[in-house]
Length: 435
Ligand code: NAD
Ligand code: UGA
Image 1 (spheres, rainbow, N blue to C red):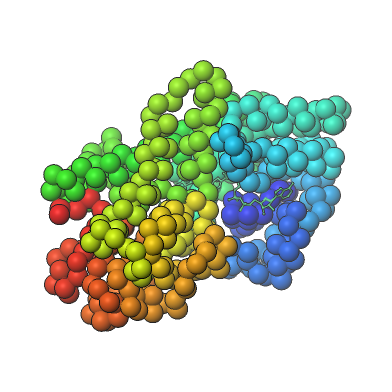
Image 2 (cartoon, rainbow, N blue to C red):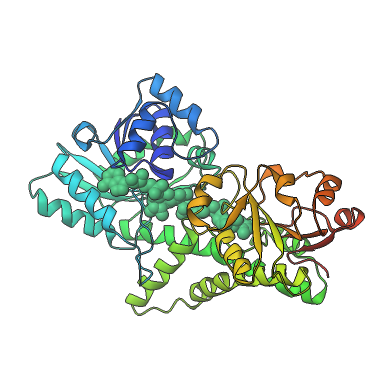
């Protein structure tokens, strides 16, 4: 099938490359000319494991190409995906739909013949109706359907998630569109992925419900971690103990510095806001948002406490800046708030991230960047592990300690074992551990 992908960011590029790998003919479009020029040269604009190879293979097979011009992609496409950003709207927390609206207007101008317009961006309920309205107004005679097909991939594991998803959700209000979508995702049936067909509004809400539920799970275990610290219990064992119950499940129960990233923070707020518009109070989601926001400053306080009550004039080494490992994405990374709070408390920050430092430099000021974990620890009064990159999982502890001015480690991802750290003479603080 011929597919046009409007927006070639994390979701558009990964989805486009995966659809091409399934054998479809995909053209990825983006307004960012630099991004498209880079992609044409084989330069991948984001860090996502395996994506460079996937793109190169499918470009070589003539199944994947890139353009800034919608007209090269849309008129011949049977399915046109909208995969543009839906960031938080300044001031009110709603999803900002301007890029979706613009994409819809451009698609309307370019499409020819029956076209299924598929919204893959995360959008509030009713956005499908809005997109349909925009296209209908511009092209009253056009034959088209608008479908909701939210994406559930995670950054850092995006290709695997796309190719072997737990499920695909397709919200289609008519049979013709449903058949096009079934054909598009047919290769996934080989991977035994169920495709759940729903109406459009249900699919739109399913996406927000999934993200809000996952954010709730994380926030719940983070609060249990706080209690563990007070009562002398171990949150990792509590998580295992509850996760073995199949009704709860073992995933997304890692206590940490609070969730971040380009999606959970904005999507929980957008869900809360749109529910308010309908007069529905989503108290659980409201609490999750508030608890998670407060957690980042609480993590900074944890560091201050580990440093004896003050970080004034002290050097704090920070390992890991991106919101999670295996991505260069700094959007809403907990590191930004934690570092900001430590700086306001008078700390000097030295930081290292295996991949995210270029992005970090755009977000953080007055940070000294190190060349590796040991360089980062040099002269530090405390070391804080914020993101659990593999590169930080097996550090040479003796070497690390030798570099530091004081042997204080605050491990916000519970990567190390308390006994091991004690054996190496560290003052070790983790999340949800026995005091
Ligand atoms: P992104 O910012 O990485 O990419 C969006 C791209 O769209 C940008 O390259 C931008 O230049 C381009 N764009 C904007 N307007 C355009 C237009 N009119 N025509 C062509 N290109 C245009 O965003 P993302 O992280 O890929 O997220 C896209 C959507 O998918 C969001 O709604 C997000 O919530 C959702 N989502 C993201 C993830 C994720 O892991 N990042 C996962 C699931 C869902
Ligand atoms: C998340 C969802 O997992 C995807 O299903 C969804 O498609 C995506 O949002 C989206 O809508 O964009 P992502 O943000 O890439 O994916 O990363 P996650 O692995 O979910 O992590 C999000 C945040 O939660 C990170 O800061 C991570 O460190 C934190 N987290 C995750 C925890 O603190 N504990 C956990 O157990 C899991």
